[in-house]
Every structure is written in structure tokens, then in C-alpha cells.
Amino acid sequence: AVPAPPGRPAPPALLRLPRVAAPLCRGFSELPPLTLADIKDRVLYVLKLYDKIDPEKLTAESHFMKDLGLDSLDQVEIIMAMEDEFG
Image (tube, rainbow, N blue to C red; front, side, top):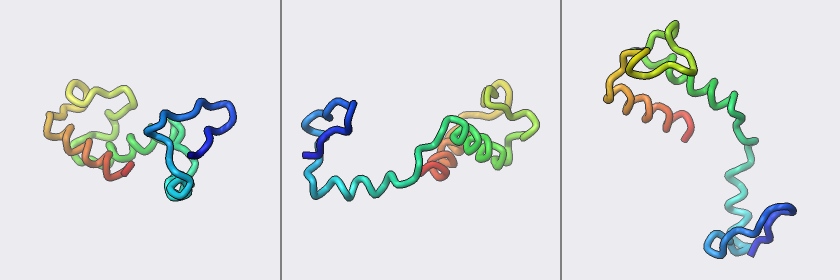
């Protein structure tokens, strides 16, 4: 099993990976983690590309229905666009 990093508790037994699998899992996290500002910028970028949203009305605090006039189908489309953006 892979030991926990210094200062962190050991993961539960079901989450521990054998040494052979550990290098495979680490390969997916080579990019630095996104900051909250990075996430906010990417979310606003995707929303500005959506044709039913007026970019002038869009803020981080905008309500989809009350402020932007979107319906539930628009929200589903936006969620799908977010999945495409963030993977």
C-alpha cells in the first residue's frame, strides 16, 4: 500500500492502492489544481458563450431564472457545457 504523505492521515483500506497502480493514478494530476478564481473565470467564460445570456447582465451572483431569464432546459444545456469545459 502507498503510505500517506507526511502530515496527512492514512486513507481508508478501500481507498489504498497497490504500489503497481499508484503511479498510474498519479499521472492524471500532473496539472496544478485550479484556484477558485480560475474556476470562476472559466464558468463565466462558458456562460458568456451561451447565446441566450446577455453578457452585460452576467455576474458571478446572477440567478439563472430571475436575472438572466433562463428556463430549466437552458440550465440543463449549461450544465452540459460545464461538463464539456471541466471534463
